[in-house]
Length: 470
Picture 1 (spheres, rainbow, N blue to C red):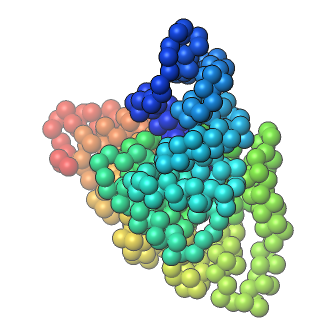
Picture 2 (cartoon, rainbow, N blue to C red):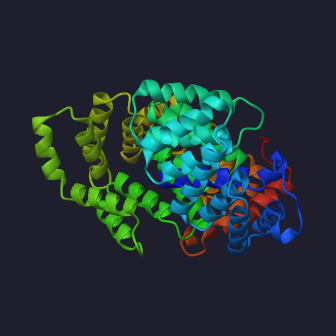
């Protein structure tokens, strides 16, 4: 969870920057000249810090500390500036000195604990963060750093539950930041409360829709739910927000692997410039997986016919080339592990691919009752209803998809056809026009030609007052 550490560090920097001015300085210094006055030097450093001139600010913080060695505020801000330029070890020492000089200062304790978590010094971080939380139970940066620590050290469920209770309490206060909801979602996921985690992540995104770590968490939850459409949308958004990051590549590779395209996933990971440890780990995992051919998996299944992992893998691998065979494996995986909604989503998708639309509708409606925000389930349900010519119901599903995926041309295209079939010509025309605006002129050439032929006829029908009102 390196993204989590960056989030916590950023939050601490935001809280710490210029906080000293608000706290006031209990310093009794006879001021002869500003150059020899530690408070004046410190204030000058603060102004440079605020302007982003970190190098100059660091030098002045050091000067203030040299004039007055017991200056916790200067130690803290000096450490915060060092952290901003990536000098984590030096920042740790600065936060240690600040918290030693003022032992009950929760801001310094929290910053120190967070940096120690970032450095994987978990045993050192735990008592410091515990003290910060004991001093201030509403200290959300400390709670978030503790959540990061707990998740990285694989503690017992009871410990996670206790921390989740504290973070839930903070999240009910007025205007909690997105990071609180994100940490809450991470704990809920660790406790297998996926539906609750999705709700928490959506609340975090509503507060800060461009938070990279939150979007990455959203993609993780989507993949665990078999919600490939949502995960792909999250990856696309991350590419725009953070084009140089490995995270979108990791998500796309996991999507390809989920679809049984393991070779393509490995190829995508190989295209990464300097691979991160996460890329290396996923590549190793996929390289091992790709060596397990369908024939080998079926042999393993003979020895353990109810293994949900093998069944789920076969469900995915056969879905493209042999939908009927995939369907059987998907069904058996769902029966072997009914609590794993991913198998149910895969089974329903296999039913749609096998054109067993009636059965797919029944299962997909049940899935959506359990996980109402699963985009993939809604997309498959919309497709099945459309193929069954249940256009009014399909219209509802495609409308749902256009709200969640406003840049997806396909949803508008089928929504327009549904309106058209229902003789809702004005709505059909509006959605066809939106499709024309979004569609790729090369990839969607045939559909665009059909739409451009249909639009003049619809305009005439609307002008003549024909059609129903939706």
